[in-house]
Amino acid sequence: MNRIKIAALIVLAIASVTQQTAWGHGADAAPKRPPQYLLIDFPDSLAIATPAAVFTPIPGAPQPAPGTGWTAYGLSTLKDKTGIIQGKQVVSCGVASLNSSLGGEPPGEIYVCTHTLNIIGKGNLVLSGAVNRSAFHTGLTQALPIVGGTGAFRAARGEVLTYESDIDPNIHVFEIYLMP
Image 1 (cartoon, rainbow, N blue to C red):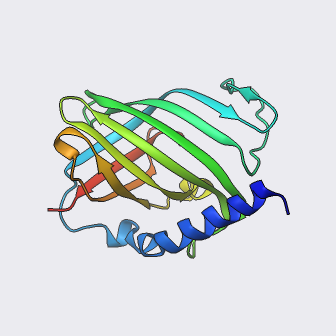
Image 2 (tube, rainbow, N blue to C red):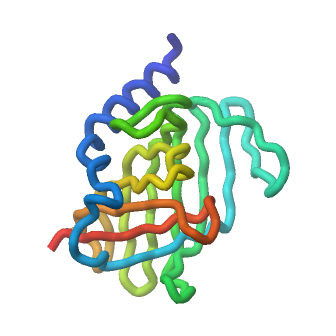
């Protein structure tokens, strides 16, 4: 087994263990209070790095299937429900597994991601964790922990619930729940 596969399995195991409680937070168990922020992510650009090359997917064109060890980098605009721009998101995700489960959901592509949400006039929120990319298309709500921030969010802790939007399957909603 090569080092990349071993590293991917270790990352997947750590992400799975640290995320076990998050799967119980789906739509049925969402916090009873409203989120402090509800942001919708509208993709601006995407680049994918494979062990052999870096490419930018072309909308509507056939895309190669992802492979373990691939990394995706994205930039998106964050808007509120009324369409007003609230900031930007930068995300990087590594493909850890092509057919796994994090805790009961149907197996799929497991990505380990770090998101930086830059909220205008407030600062950055940093989220990091594993998601089942394939499960977004099944209506599953997934949770990512808030691991830090800057500015107004410098001591931030909490979680972000994310799910596919009604607008487009490639647009995601972020419900941000900061701990009091």
